[in-house]
Length: 504
Image (cartoon, rainbow, N blue to C red; front, side):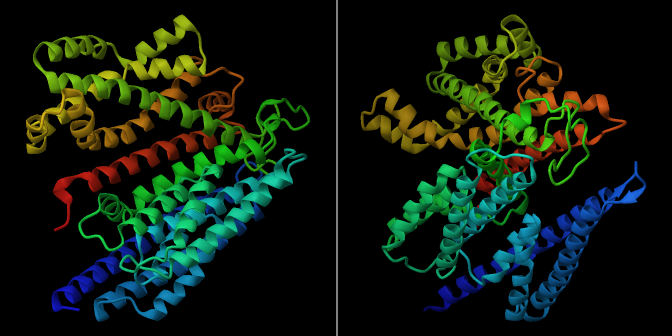
């Protein structure tokens, strides 16, 4: 090994240690806030008494928070005085991994990354795959306290537990290799198993499987890798990865809820359990019709994700295509397309959505169409600007010189290199689509009133703010967390894809 290679490895190791310190600090701060929230909620103001279950959970969170604080202080001391994190400090992180069983994703993630001196992107995916599966099982397992469960509950939980064991084994296997190590060929089977396991909705497993197969394919090859470069810049960003975790967790629990949750608990009236406070049987209480609020929020996540993604995907495709043709051909084509889109852009999006729904009725399909139409001009303008910029590159001129037709140049050379701003914009605006969905449902102009959707749940809960405030607080928190998650992910992608921030 040459001196320059040794220096490069030492530099990367110091950078990794600094990233681990940042992750541990972020986890500590977040855990402090969660502990304070639990302590505040442990006191029942209406009954003037402490809730033992919530107080006990707050005590457990307080223990892990204090341990994390000591760990952060020790890491800082190691970095200042020794320039590296000591082996004993990494061993202490094993205790913090137990925080995963309390639902503290932040401490558990930071601890699992701190344990390893050198990690790879695949290890990061494996960690989040395991934690996502663990959270899905934990949330689904709460149904065992209900009066009755879905007929498929037990076999589905058995499948999820088997997947958890597989994820744990894969994490242990991946932890044996760092980014510079060659993988054995039999890891192809592991990659394929991870891709197949995406049937549970755990998209981190899909990312892990693809990354393993790419790792095997690039072995012995030189040059940079866009996939790895992107994730190496995104993975240390704890806010972005936390946002991605929450989005994928919601997607996974939405898929698994078909088999582990009983839909009747969310839609059928139960007059024997009206306005029940939070308990083991009803973790978030019941509404004025005796329906389980916990089940309603879980099923409502499915609607919010579908409407949010579809009302963003449609304008991305249509607006992207119009913007690409407008920017590439220019002149009269540009004038016609952009002037027509300017007319559409002049109409406020929310008013256009209200008009469409009022004319054609309130249902999920009309809501998606209504939200999509108003967003087409902004995506078309973004794509047009990117295409105008990319069209000046030399590889476009080279493609023209080689005799490629315009369609091939647009779809094969220009659009793939102009997608980065569209990806960033779409992740940042999905949160706006979720808010618009909930807002229209709150006004009675969204999905049908009988369907459990976060806006509908919030509307019903708002009438009980003084007596049973949890009916409005929990769906409101779900909306806030999902929107924040998309915003955090969008900010992280913007930083990761910004060429000005690329490391030398």
